[in-house]
Length: 238
Image (cartoon, rainbow, N blue to C red; front, side, top):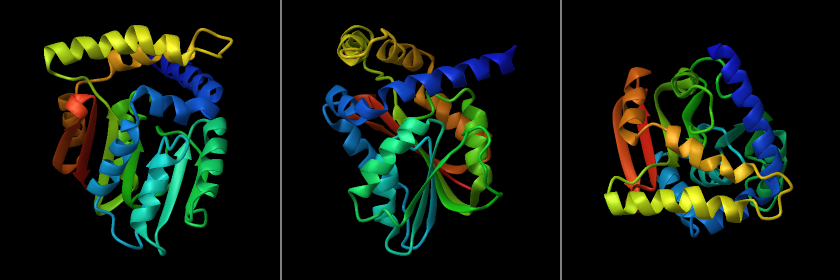
């Protein structure tokens, strides 16, 4: 039964992001008041990437985090962006073409629950705004741990839940009522952004995600709450 639920969720996520790929970056910028750009930049800085390193960006979406990581890795560095959605990868390809990093970023389709790489392949493994959409968070982080080299970094940047009562109420008011109305403008199906509040409701608290980092074997866990707790960065060392 659990396996069936995972397959259904994967099918849903595939359909969802296939339908919004072309508008994903614009909608994110509008909904977050362009804070998503700051969150990705902060995450790339905290990844402490050195020139020439190899990086895997899981659930890379439209490639924005992959681009930020490629900038940190320098001329000799390599970034692999992996995503479940073909349409998101097509949009990532277009975004990457506009940067100087097209020769340093490789895109491929794949499943975060079964990463198609040997153990100890990458110096750094990241996931940006993808944990809330995967069917199994511990499995995803375990796979990221597996493909990371000893001494390497595993990092997540994700939406989170503010802890301050008033901010938390305003946050969910926005996400549950205003955001879906705006996000579905121009869509034929009344679906894509009505799913986002549900995915945020079921997303574990940032402290729980920190514990999952520990459970998969990561050490020296560090967490950062950004913009009043609306987003969070978690990182650990293998």
